[in-house]
Amino acid sequence: MTEYTLPIVFGLLTGTISRLFMLRTDYRQYPTYLHGKIIHVALGFIAAGLGAVFGPAILEEEFTAITFLTVAASQFREVRNMERNTLSELDNYELVTRGRTYIEGIAIAFESRNYLVIFTALVSTMAYLLFNIWIGIIVAIASMYISHLLMSGGKLKDIVDIEYVEPRFEGAGLYVDNIYIMNIGLPARQKEVLRYGMGFILKPKNFNARSTIANLGQRQAILHDVATALGVYRDSGTPALVPLAKRDLDDGRVGVFVLPQDRDIDKALKVIGDVPTLENAIRMSTEKVGMKNES
Image 1: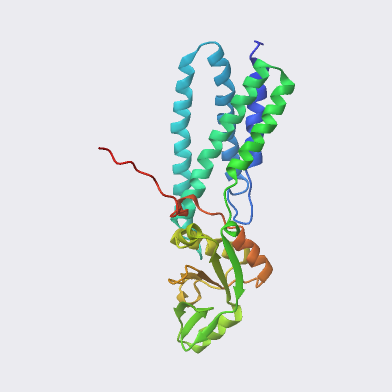
Image 2: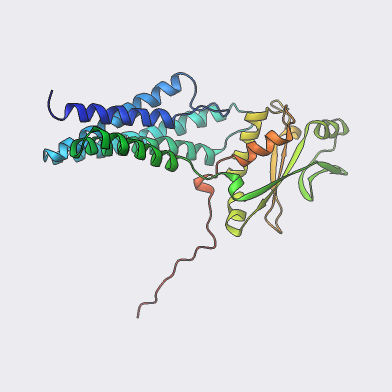
C-alpha cells in the first residue's frame, strides 16, 4: 500500500455514506425502492471515488486529474437527463401529474447531490492527508452536515399561510372561499364533490411568495403531493373530479381543491406545508438590480 491508499479509502467511504444519507424514499416513492436506489448509490460511489483521488493527484502535481472532474461533470449531467426522461414518461400514467417544473427540480437535485458527494470525499481525503484521521472524521461529519443543509430546499409553509376551507357551490360554480374553481352542472357530480372534496387557501406572506405560488408548476406540485400522500378520488376520463388550484387575481391567494381518499385535514395541511418550493418557480420580484449610467 502507498501513503495515499488509506486516505483514498477513507474519502471513498465518507462520500458513499454521504450519498446514502441524502438518498431517501418517502411518500412520493422516488427514487423507487429497490433498483432506483441501487443506481443512485452506484453513481454516488463513483462520485466519491473521483473526489477521493483528486486530492492525492494534485499533491503529486498530476494536474491532468482536473480532466477527471470535467468528465464527471458531463456524466452527471446525463444523470439529470436520465431522471428527466424517466419521470416524464412515468408522468403520463399518473392520475395527478407532477408537472414539468417539479420533474426538472427533481432532476437537478439528483445531479447536484453527486457534486456534494465529490466535495465530501475531496475535503475528507485532504484533511486525512494534511493532518490525521481524527481531523478527517471531523471534516467528514462537517461536510455531511453542510451537504444536508444544501440538499434541503425551502418548503411551502415558509412562504405561505395555509387554511382549510370547505368547498361550496353557487349554482353550477364550485368555489373555495371566494375563489372560483370550475363549473360542474350535474347534481350527482356536485354531491360527490361536496362529499369527498377539500379546499385550502394559500395566503402568500410577501410579494415574492405571491409570484412564486402563481407559477403553474408550483401549483401542480401541490396537487401531486396531496394526491400521492392522501390518495385521490378519481379515475381516467372524469374531468369533473380533477384536483385544481386557482388564483385570486386581486390579492394573489391560491385556492386548492382536492378530492383525497383520506379526508384528514391535519395531514393534508402538513403535506401542503411540506411541498418543496421549486427552484424554477421561485420569483424575487422585489429584488432590484442597480445599473449605472455610463457617460
